[in-house]
Length: 104
Image (cartoon, rainbow, N blue to C red; front, side):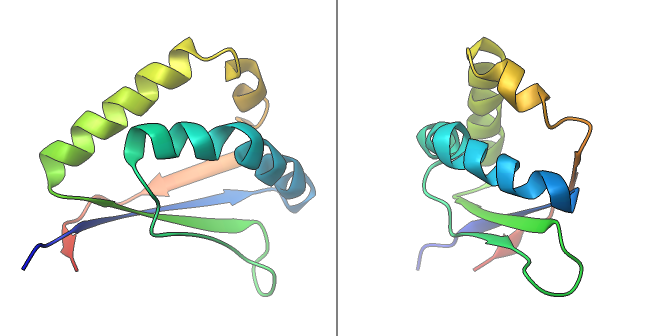
């Protein structure tokens, strides 16, 4: 049986910036993430309760695989012509990540 390392990343954004953030993610971010990280298991946003929350669930074969893919994504982000657009949300977006090996 193959095991998968689940990678959960949580973020929050000002509610007035969420639509613009999601539009930018749909235009630029998702394709870049999929290219370098592989297919997402899920991407969630809130529409009730505490608004402006999001969660991204990715999958890797192990921690080394995760580290290699995350490094490739960061390198692509630095070289991207879209970087100024991404920086636009740096003051409104707060990401948290708790590394853990959750095997599914």
